[in-house]
Length: 449
Image (tube, rainbow, N blue to C red; front, side, top):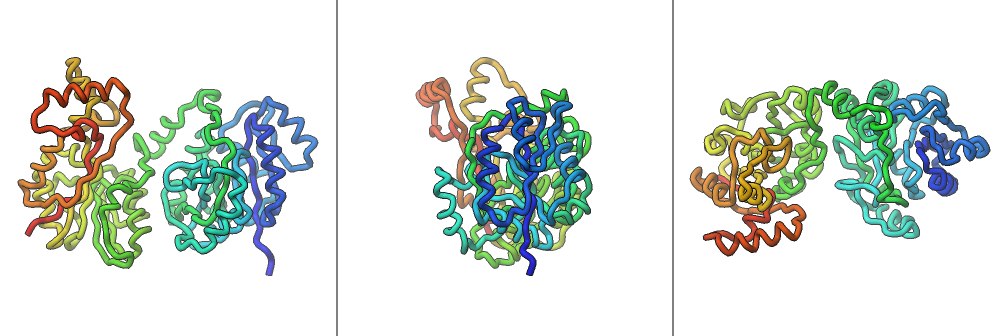
């Protein structure tokens, strides 16, 4: 049987020394059939090195280009293997990394794949302190139960794709500049065709320069990806991180056949995370933004609607109804909590996250006579209702829910904030310190009777 191999494409910008070390390392990985370097007009001597290296390469001596242009140029100018790994030179692939990424790419619904790394955040982060530990950790992950996890977006430092997907999905958008946004745009298009990005939990890569200064290609080229993406996808922002702190409230057996509705599901990432954890769960979403729902419907059963109409366009009742940062946007949150009682099973729960308007940073503004709305955060200008700890308790207790569990999220406070809290505590009545330090309350409220 023919051994499956991959083409590795290294995209570089003023990283000559990292590139040299990366190329030397990759020589030891048997699944790499060939290596192509795409250099984005470096000024550190990379061009001279590449001209003598013997590696096939592209050097954009006409000036810096967007990441989509780099990727398309490689695809247009070189013969590629069936599987292609795009990566930056500050990453060092584990010796099983390419093989295991290929295994995931062969899965029917996989569109892209990303590994785990110390250079990543959130769900792709894996703590690797030294490159010498890479081989041992790889061996330890050999029998990892979760081979792959479905997500909506993977990190841009290393990712893999097949020629089949490239053919079906078409070219990368050359109007978009940064690698992060080029990959995101491509993934959203891919999801609309029925393919999902996946994380290979057994694939590892060590990042040699975690805090490396990133080049601002948008500034260099005078473009703003956010404006381009907003016009293209009709969204102000892209919620790509699931609300794991809410999903953690769901404590069911892995094979449980629970029915879960998320109100304001946005792109559907939280519902997708629920499906990763509970494969037999029936997941539903209600989303007011048609553009977001258009993506989410490929991840779950999602319909466009406004919960304030007090209509849920799905039959039956639900074991859980999720409101992730939604109740504060409603004109009558208490009425909606009341309405949802009839849509829950006998012992069903509402799971919600609610921002805390009593946070010390808001108190500081009030003491200065200010209450300045912002685009995001505690004083998001689209917030209609504001909640404190006691208001949250009242909201659910008056509608016959028992609050089974409540957790908090916090943000880093400076010394001035801490001093203000100490002063406020001296003059406050029936108040605990968490009421000033909590950024967001997370609530599990069970229907009572």
